[in-house]
Picture 1 (cartoon, helix red, strand yellow):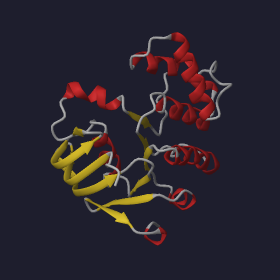
Picture 2: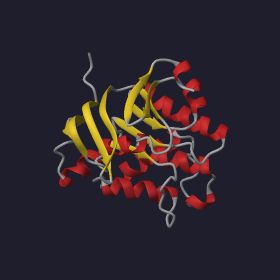
Picture 3: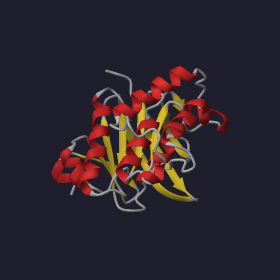
Length: 229
C-alpha cells in the first residue's frame, strides 16, 4: 500500500488555549480528494492549519510529507510549505502587481532563477486553470472566480504533492464554485492529494471524495452521502 502523505494518530489541536479537536486519526494518500466539513468553529480550518504548521499539534503523532509536526521547528516550516499548495477563500493575491508578476513572485521566492523557465512554468499553470490570456491583468480586473483560478495556479506552481483549500468556493456563486471544485477534482485525479474545507454539501455530491466531519471536538469519517447532509 502506498505510504500516506498525511498521517495523524490521536492528535490534539488547540486554538488559543482551547481544545478544538482531540483524538484525531486520519491517513491521507496521493490522488485523494478529501473534504473536511462541520459548522463554523468546529475545527476544520484549525485542522487544515496544522497541516502547514500554522497551528501546533499539542499531542499525538502527526506526520506531513515526512515532517514530524509535533516537533517541527519554526525554521523548517518554509521548507514544508514549499511542498504544499494553499488556496484561501479570499484569494490573497498581491493587488499591486499583475497576475504574471504574482506568479513570478512565488517562483522567485521559492528559488527559481532562470527567467525563461519561469515564463514557461507560468504559461503552463495559467493554461491548466483556463486563464492563459489573463497574465497581464491586475487582480481587481478579474471576477472572483477568475481570481480563485489564479490562486489555484499559484498553488500548483511548484508541483506540490498536497493542495490545501480552505473554503475555496465560499465567496463564489454556485456555478463558479462548481467550476473551481472541478479544477481541484482534476488535480486529485492527476495524483495530488487535495484537502478541501467547505460548507457547500452539494459539491460533495457532485465531486465525491473522502469526507470527514468535525463535530463536538472530534473528527469522524462520513461513510456515504446520506451521512453528509
